[in-house]
Amino acid sequence: MNLTDIKDIYEKYNVPSNIVAHMRMVAAVALFLAETINQKAGQPVVGEKTVTYAALLHDLMRVSGRGHEDLAAAILIERGEKELATIISKTRFICIISARENERPQTLEEKIVYYADKRVMNDQIVSIEKRLEEGGKNYNRGADAEKNRNLSEKAAIAIAKLQKELCDLVGFHPDDINERTVAQFYDRFQDGPLQ
Image (cartoon, rainbow, N blue to C red; front, side):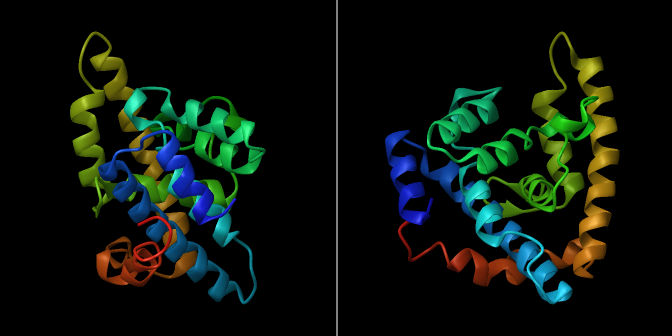
């Protein structure tokens, strides 16, 4: 897998430009976190290409609606990319509180991509609170609104813990993860094959 392969996947599945822009920003946040963790550790402990590629593909099938993570994972499994598929299958909002441990983000790569996705709304970096508030407007409606609201509240607590864990690793406050600090990472995808 490389960036040219990812561009080919975007073209094959007609991924809309707004979703590509979202995935690029998620990838920039993920790569920023991965590189910072690796630098602080003095050695590679997070697969930088892995988090980048997973982030660049996590919403590949977003236009298909709920369950899009599983559809994207299936496409990647067909291509022999099981690790990327596993990470993407764990980006579903509610998976962080799954009763099944194997469905929750466990590895640093899984946690980073999950968190980066929850920090990006459209193609803008926002606070977790803002992202959850906006997401709740869509998720907490309909016949299951009360159940979904309860799940959202539990997930918000788990996401806050994940945010603390990752921010402690990188030595930053969540507000330090913003467009300015990740700009150089986003720019890596601007002029390359994803353009």
